[in-house]
Image 1 (cartoon, rainbow, N blue to C red):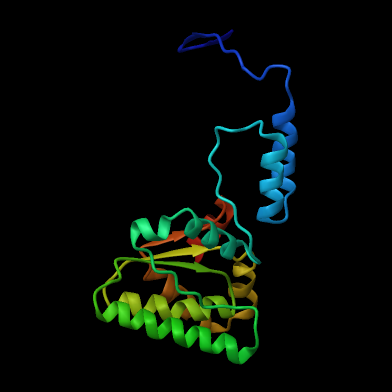
Image 2 (image 1 turned 120 degrees about the horizontal axis):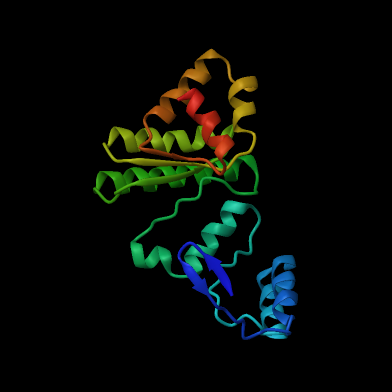
Length: 193
């Protein structure tokens, strides 16, 4: 029994004495691919009542995007995903950005952009996403700036000159929401915007 200021609670776990669920949690967290993850689910089958989103791609954001797409989130909410990066040649990377920008301008012109949710790191990622952000701001649409790059503050403080620092602040100041992945990132971003 647990005694709290809200009352006394008695709880019992139906899997008491069975530790296969711990083995399964370990196996699914150690999985390197979706196939490894599925194999762990089938092998142990000890945690049947949990919903998972699993990604299988290079890069953290690519994994998140693939998982969201696989669960039908994009279809249910009319989300259009425009990649701005690939692991190919410089020419191919440039073509990806041009294609994405052309598609985005078309969506903006047709009034089909309600909000831009930009997943941003530092350096070239920031510069690529800033084009989309500025187009969105010019169209009077809100922007969610979602920072994932752990080196963003280093980029800002050590690699940006005065003009680029001004541009970073300008972009951030025009975003409706800025999301950092930790309290320290939030504190650091607050200092520059």
